[in-house]
Length: 118
Image (cartoon, rainbow, N blue to C red; front, top):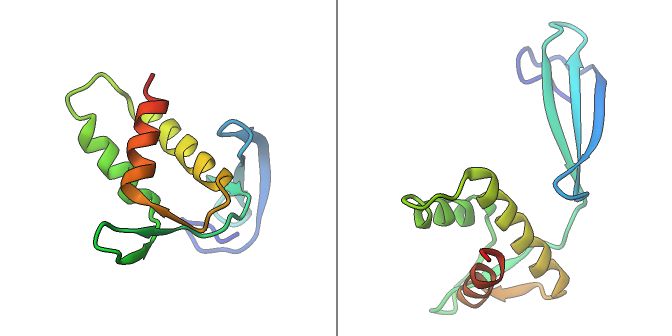
């Protein structure tokens, strides 16, 4: 793992624990050169999703787009970033469980919002 501060490629793992409801491993690492600490997350590799838009265009799924849309929708609501991040995690998990490589965005988004905000 390359240090984000100095670019050195050797580090040691200081702490390792399960994160994001068991879906990831969070590791605290320390660079052996500059001795600064940084955090990495390891996820299980999943099948890449393709989003089918209303006009039938296809584009790769981007988590950041979903997060941005959720943040915009929740701007004036008492919903914190941790809750939004958890909702996006749950949406991704449910879509992966469907075992479909292509999922219509509007259908999955409206279904997920109704199921995960209560």
